[in-house]
Length: 188
Length: 348
Image (cartoon, rainbow over all chains, first blue to last red):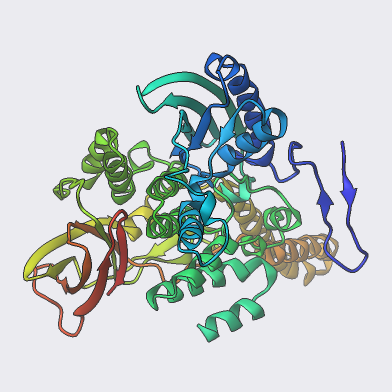
């Protein structure tokens, strides 16, 4: 196990872990090791999907927030960001992502260029913002239980690549994780 | 707020979270939502965290230490309320599915109730789960059915998927813990109280009645025995046995020791009695009665559909006869934006 001790004799005890490692405060929720495992698996799946692998040119993909149907509040962007970054890192020549989440800033910059307040406006002819060939999104669903014998949480992480022109799901991938645990007797 | 922060600083480590929770509700009532949320986040474990054993929990189980030396995480109704407030904040942030996640976790906190009919029976949590699910164009009928089943005679308002103003209301003073049992080994709840039994919300001359969804004293007192109660019961048995042996030994031993012919036996019995007294006197079966003291007695909710812009909502708290309580009226400014729900919190 990779561990880097950052302990000082006078400060708090801190152990640095790789994000894919299970920490010692592991719980039933969605944790960094789940994020790493799932995003790597989904990135591989997307790259192997026919609409991407056999596409002519570089298909444009837009990220849409995940629908969280579990009992765990999550940062809904983090999974898709990590999948996107892994794809860009390993397959930037096969796929294009557009930064829709920054649309306001992009529009502002374009308007500045077009108005001549900054340089570069002469290069803009017509609308250059790209439309999506595919939308990447997902749904997380969970089944949770809690009793005297402990608590358990099953979470299904499901991702889809959708053709926005036809609403067809052209690729789907999922990952399932079930965790069980039990609070200390003093808290039960 | 300043007093709350002073209490947090002053409190021992195992009790800081309780003061954070109390101060969070103060902040919430003052409209200081980001501060309230930060305090809640610091005070509460994450949704999936397992509360693990540590030196304090081991001490809490020791015969010679009371339960309240463990870190404070509250009882099930208090944990549920923490997640309920968290859910409200997520909804305020425009993340209704994360809000729903919090309401589900809140409901799960109540799943350990001793009697099956009292497990996960908070009405508002299921009602909101179903409401959000319905607003997200999915089927929320299961959660709504559960909510209505637990609501008894209260007819829950229908879901209006076009509603864009969510008003969370709370009334009264919630339950307080006190020690019960022969030697303080049980938690019993002093009933909370509230004059208000419903609320009337009027915007633009149109009143809407918000009924009571949940009663926190009911939720707290239907929890039933905890696993920890079995440990406290053993401690109580040791204490009572020690005290009994002590009383018999000291009294009987003193009598026997006063007679020359039974002096030896008397001294032995007296010694055993003193040991019993020491054990009984040292045993600490007291249950943890630390309380999140500013929780309400009742939870209520109403959803309104209002046009974009700023509106004034007049909120009156009504007694059991539907009469507005004097001096309790609140005028709340509600700013409605397009594309997201506006979430408002009001306490009486």
